[in-house]
Image (cartoon, helix red, strand yellow):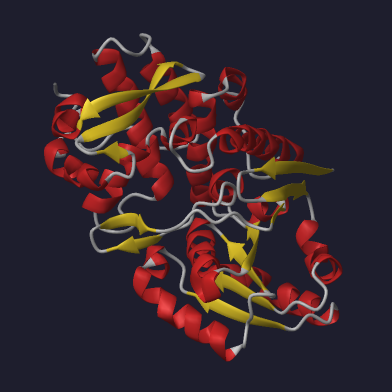
Length: 358
């Protein structure tokens, strides 16, 4: 089934199309919708290993003038230092502002391709084709992109809405179990903050091979995100709620060596610890954290750090949090499952607030 959402922001109107099997006719779709445009496909080596042969066949058959730029998988490809390499490749291809950059991959590729599209020649049209569950339900929609600096994740970036987003849930079937479960952390986030029914439905465990079930989950998440970013496309208000679990999650990612915790695992821990902290402070309904814990466990996601973890040290990078205003942090807390809210706290108090030993 083909389902299309139209997203209207202050700077761009675009569609998000969810269609099982879209990738099988992606080449002809691009040729029909963007005739005469050159296309630079940015992907990673993992996606290329699985889908590269079909990609090449489709693009060539459709007669598209295109080039392929493949990066190593992982966060290192989201480093700010990768950008000159991408700019050079685009210049060699003689890409112009009238042409197109296509991001084919997960969150890392979407972020770095989006940043490249926003800054190369002061802006080139961008089409997103996410290949991971996490990118489908979250990072491919809304126009946020980013690059990592040595001091932390996503500290460089822009808001740059895509021209179009195509989501093919069939990609989910080829994901390793741990990558699928990683994406479910972001799905669970939507249920926690916005949709009690979604949270409850997730208790009936979704699997990556349940095509229609996954398609429905993806569409529900996209619909929630559409409603949020149409109200706040720049993360100044209600859109901050989409960052539930990310404040401490990013601290975890910054503190531990890469690959200790994936993004979804870090966010899962961040969500649980934040719900627990909210309960301790009397701001979150009792038993909320326990309900969240059960759902995280159902998808093999962690909910806590090792007993000897130094929460104060881990929390140090909160000083770089993008939701801060001066010394004030805007935390996303839960009133209860299905209803999030913003809570302000001085950043110097954050470690004590989040530490379960307090």
